[in-house]
Image (cartoon, rainbow, N blue to C red):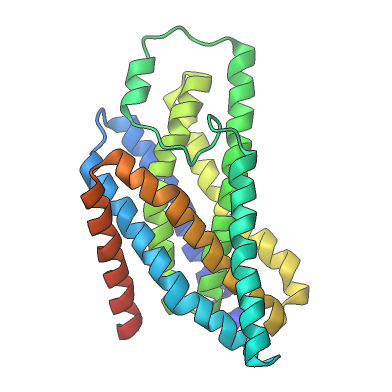
Length: 273
């Protein structure tokens, strides 16, 4: 586990970088009046391509390899498959438990802010409730994403860097999605920016809490299981959120082009590094 200790600081910094990218989306909502849908569609597809490719080609096989050090190959494959679907079930349950309107993974456009500025200010009680539920939803959603980025970087920094970039790209439109309902709730762009930035901080916080909880039990079996769960989480995010959002923002072909560009980028980076 000495290698994990050496990679700890870098893993945290990469997770922090990925989390704080929500601020970029919030700033886009703050300063822009129109969403560049084509570019956003390609970027979301790219992010999905990176995460799907690395999950199946690198993370899942590595989880089997780690587990096989402590058990037979066949049993390690069963454990890895169990971890993979555990990750899918975990993030799926989180996604289902958060109402759509407060769900930061429900995509929004920058234009919604400017359209809504002409509407009446909501009652203070309703705004307060919306702010609380939105903040809670953000934290819940970003926790497993932070743990996924952190775990990958902890195992292999060369693997963690492209994953952090993919998560960061994914978090930019999420920042827009966070800023819009917060603005609805408070009527303040400054608060929208603040809450969006804080939502990103849930990712490094989730990484630290997850690491603190798992550290006493961090055997090869536990780490291999968690690693395969990370693959499941990233595949779910890609298929349930990124690709549908990419199509919603732009044309179908743009999202698919971005998907394959992301896969190619990940493949080349793995071959080179």
